[in-house]
Amino acid sequence: MDAFFGYIVREPMVVLQLTGQHIILTLVTVGISIAIALPLGILITRYQRLSFLVIGFSNLGQTIPSLAILGLLIPLLGIGFKPALAALVLRAMLPIVINTYVGIVGIEPSVIEAARGMGMRDRQLLTIVELPLALPVVMAGVRTATVMSISIATLAALIGAGGLGDLIFRGIAMVDGPMLMAGAIPTALLAILADLLLGRMEIGLTPMGIRV
Amino acid sequence: MGYILSHADQVLVLTMEHLQVTAVAVILAVVAGVPLGILVTRLRWLYPLVLGTAGVLYTIPSLALFAFLIPFLGLGVKPTILALILYSQLSIVRNTAVGINTVDRAIVEAARGMGMTNGQILRMVQLPLALPIVMAGVRTITVMDIGVATIAAYIGAGGLGVLIFRGIASLYPEQIIAGAAPVALLAVLADYLLARMESALRPKGVGR
Image 1 (cartoon, rainbow over the protein chains, first blue to last red):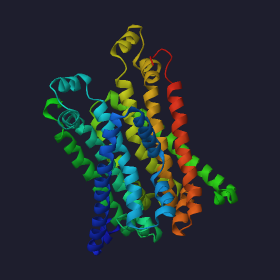
Image 2: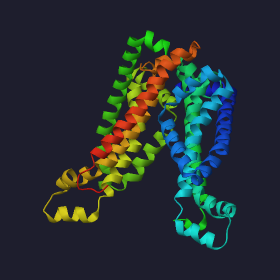
Image 3: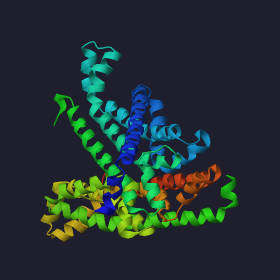
């Protein structure tokens, strides 16, 4: 047991502090990602030509390994919290953009027609019909983005942004099993927990009328 | 670009290492995942159990998964390949099962009517029809593996991540780019090629 929990028991405050850093980095990332990706996703449903460009770029961006993105940003932004945040946002916003777009475009045309027929303006159509119906799909994107951010945030330790990756990297370098586990166990728990909670929210946010 | 040109040999060797680890992991993942996918279509009660486990494994951040395997397998290629196989099971098992389950009932009935045994139906009807979907899973995991293998350089598995980690440690941007650019290129290229294969493997008779 000591091999797994030894470090956590001995240094609970260190583990707690790094967990806090990890959560903050993830939350700020997801917050900024939503703030950028949601409007962008809505925008490209209005301009078809732009959508090809943005979706194509997003798909391409998702194939580029995150460590590569993190590394490539160092020459531009240096090291620390901010460059780590930039790399994370760059990656986390992609699934949200795609899902917002897909969520809105996938709404049945007759529903939109009906809303128009009731005399809704563009803005009303968006806020009363499109966004609520697209919300579960958007949330699925947020869930993907969150779990991914927790994962990439471990790498951010490498460029001095702290977080639980710190213990994993140091544990590997120093061949210190318990230290390794002190980073790995909370990281894995965070990811699994976030996935579970956001999965619940995804179901909870589905409008009553379209629940299966 | 200076580093890549002046260290072309090294970049090439690391690229080959990277491809090797990825290829072995993808092949083993398919060898393990496809039979498992077939199994869960036969024993339906296993489906949620297997998929649930694969889903949890998939959620665990890669650096943490490596960390969990190190006490048992040490450093190097072994924990890397096992981690990649574990990650891949969600895509491979799910896509195999979905591919088989979505084959039109009528087609299976027709095959049975022609006197095919269960094994023949699987080999001659269900698997060929499921192949494009399985291939889509292979494509997903290949791109993912190329990315995760980069991180595995830190636990001594070699590959292009070596240059990225070294470059970050010594704040040497050209070295980072020498690792990051080929990795990105590999991922994009693999995605493109496997997408091609995906459509080529679609049986002639199936639409689109």
